[in-house]
Image (cartoon, rainbow, N blue to C red):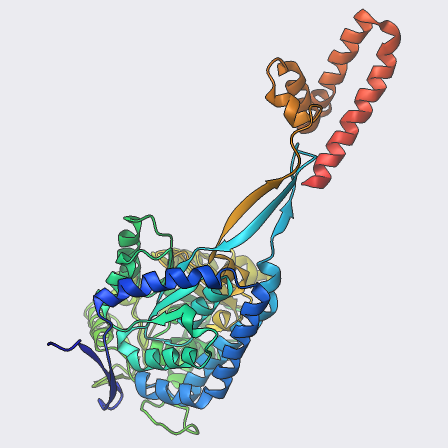
Length: 538
């Protein structure tokens, strides 16, 4: 009998193989979906307070496993132990914020009942059921655990498919969940390549959260559309950095270089294109080159040696980076520092003389290239920043915070940092995600949790009263009454609101003149009271 294919754990920095895991058979994926569907009946009815208690135990597991997490990720991705620890830090910080706020966010809430003054209306956020999470390789902890933990807190069960590129970290995550027996029955981790991911989508989960390339996001969305499965996607980016003439140029160069080359540029909100106003362009370029020359390239398992840029994690990404670099050079770009490759290592590379005809200024590079473009002024910087299909993040540099904020409002990106780079993802209460070709899902913040729920609406009350306005409106023969109510409650000026009063007074005056004055006073008071009540209820 043929064995299942295996995923080999390979250190991209050294080529060393350090383990393996069997790929999950396709047939088992459908069984996993069925199992999680059954488990969801239990987990969804577990009180939120109890879910919080159980996930707090998992938080404790993560804290105890910090060294283990950084060690495995160091071998699995080639990044430093400290950079791996940053991933764990961001994940635990997010989880703690969710544990604190989830009970309030997930409570049912009362809303206005409108004209049904004798009824109460409520909205309950209820889980979808089985959530599939498809995770990437560039941040195998920080981009997989947050959506998994949010979905669990919301009352869903989860099937996680880690990337086959960082399969060792996927196995570690599976083991971490097994260390909390109260939680492990509600999470299933499956291992494999794109075929396994396709089978997961085909198993018809109730909701899908994918982090990956725009191409992969489109394929998943197309497959999910066949079954009307909702999809949240956090996809690629081509983040712009704008440096205005009044910026702190030294800080902009230092943190711009960090934002371009952190994690070897394998970050969806990396600084992938820089626009510098011409009056400070030469100084910025000079400082950016100096900062880049300070960066080391290499690999170490030593926790005391974090100051280096590691390898590219995926061999397929090396080809993309080289293609972008070759295309830029062929079209006139100039390399000021870097540009060389040694196996999976690519030097941090600063380029000038770039334009929007080049792939490295239009498509996601996801590697250590920092192209810098001179612009005339603020307006041209904004225009060039927006001349792109992606809309994930951006950074604006100016000493004038009011000006920077004004510029940020004109940039087509959904998460913008002023006078820093990449910082937005590390804020647990700040929703992170994209627009345009960067997707439409969110992670972190209230939005990152509530997206894993559906709003269920309830109207509660006794049988309708005959004298309830809504009841009268349902019965035939009350056209004029209903028109009067609409004008009284929703009129936008005095003429509209007083028209029913005038009509009532006119009718009363013809039939019983002595009652006209009293009716007018009563209707006027009723109109005022009705408008006031409606405004308060809304």
